[in-house]
Length: 94
Image (cartoon, rainbow, N blue to C red; front, side):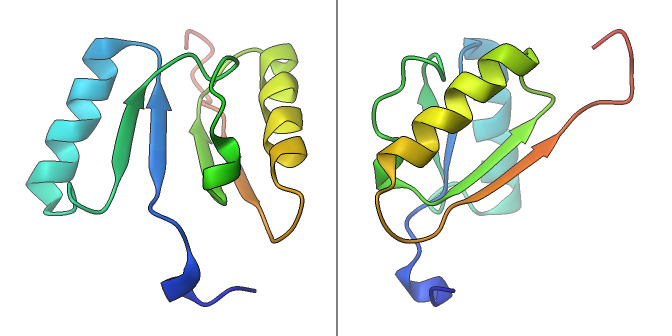
C-alpha cells in the first residue's frame, strides 16, 4: 500500500450543483476545504479518474451506472492501487 504522503488529493464528483455546494460548505466548516477537491460533473462522463486513487460513493446511482463508473476507474488506473468504497442508503426512498 502506498504511503499516505504519496496519495493524491481526494476528489468528490457531484452532478447536482446544490449538493456540491453543501459538501464544499461542510468541508470549510471542518477546516479541510483545502484538502479536498470538489468537481461539478457527471461521473459517467468524467475523464480524469486516473489522477486519483481513492473513490467514495455515498448512495450513488443505479447498479448499471455504478458498474460503468467503476469499470472506467479501473481501466484508467494501469498501475497502483485503487480504493473504492460504496455506501448505499438503507432508506428505500433515496
